[in-house]
Structure formats: C-alpha cells, structure tokens
Amino acid sequence: MKKQTLLLISLLSFLLAGSCFYAATRYIDALAIERLFAPVVKVAEGKQIDPFEPITREDVVLVQEEVDEILPGSFQSLESVLGKRSSQTIYAGEQVLKQKLTDTQLLPEKGEARYEFPLTSIEPITELRKGDRVKIWVKYKPPTELEHLPEPTHFRKTNATADLLFESRLATVKDSNGTEIYTLKPSMLPGPDHMDAVFNGSREKPLLNGEKRYRDYRAQPTALTAYIGFNLSDQQYVALSEAMMYGTIQIGQISDAEDRTP
Image 1: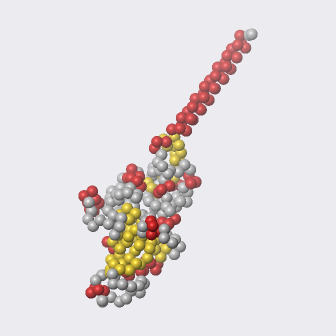
Image 2: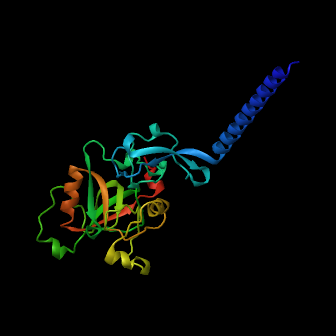
Image 3: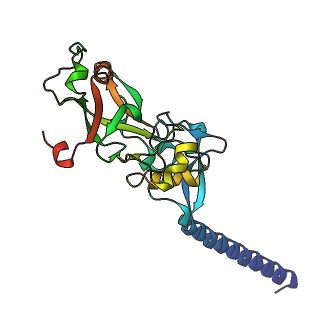
C-alpha cells in the first residue's frame, strides 16, 4: 500500500474519530443542559404585569433556568400565558406562576364593576382572604340615631339589629400603597411588627418581596389592610352606599359547608 494512501486513510480515520468525539460531547452537553436547565416564562426586562391587565407577547420572555430555581406552577411556553390576566403585580424577572393568574370568579362579570372601599368603612368580623365568599350586612345604629332617618330605598330594613344586604366574593385586599396583600384579620390594634406599616406603609422590594407576597397568600398578611374590593352590580353598590348611613357595614366569610349548600 502506498504511503500516500496510508496517510489519507489515517487522516480520514482521525477526522472520523474527531467527529464522533465532538458529536458525543455535544450529546452529553445537551443531556446535561436538559437535566440542569428547563424553559420558564418570566416577565421581560423593563416590563411589569399589572393586575387584571391582559398579558401580551411584549410582557414576557422564555428563558432557560436552572431546574432548582424553577418554582412550582411555572409556565414553559409563551402561548400558555398570552391573553391571561394576573391577580397581582408581577415585576421584571419574576416567573409567571399559574397561581398568580386570575380565576374568572375574581373578575367583574357582565353588569358588574370593581369597587374598592377603605377599611374604615367596613368592619370584617372573621379572617378573610382574597377569593373568599362573604356575606355583607348592615349592623344598625341605636334606634335613637335612626329615628331621624327616612326608610331606606335601596334595601329593606326588616329588624332592629341587622339585615343581610347580599353575598359576594372578596376580590382584592390591599395595603395603603395599593399593593395586594391577600389576607386581612379582624384585629382592632396592629401588632408590633405592623407598626411601621401604620406610619410608612409597606415598602416594596421588587422580585423577592413579590414572591414573598405570593407565599403569604392564604397565610399571614404582609402589611396592614387599607382597602378591600368587591365585584358589584350598580344596585349592590347603591344599596351598600346607602346602608352606610344606617349603621356599620360588616362582612364575614361563608363557611365551606355553607358555600356548598344549594
């Protein structure tokens, strides 16, 4: 066999071995990336998803994230979040989670609008969380204070103590800065940990605090509640506004058993 032929065979063998080694390395790298990284939808840099605003393609990006950093309930494709709405503010760099997107029950239906009230106007008598079914009633003032008021026109006064106005769903719970805090407790006086919020409000720390607010959902409020909101019809809003002249508006959670009653 000629020397040139041997050199050519050797060169081809070397190139073939190199190609196989390169392909094997790329395959191993791909397997490693597949195991260590996965796609996740995040809010794009410089963007912010506001509550109840439809998510657009410009709002989100699909990135490769370390598997250990991906939160439960995250989305793996842009198409799965486009057009949906969030129940809270989601900041740039945050993962978009299924639990953060609204249930249709928290959006105003046809003939309804979102009405928010300062907590000074309404007295919760049970612990309440965003999404809870609630009863709303008026606890009347003493008869001596009511005797100078005319009969209500937008709701019925049936006894001297209290009357149920209607049932609704608690759609939002916010602090004095308008930040969703999800949970409120019927506490007359704030605890020591909340005193700073009384004077300064809650101070947002994007990203980490945003995730913390979600973890606090159905747990402990992160600040003092200042506003609560309901999805009401015009008739319900007028009745509620009128009832405030006749007494204290109180709200309480409907128990699971009561909520299942047909």
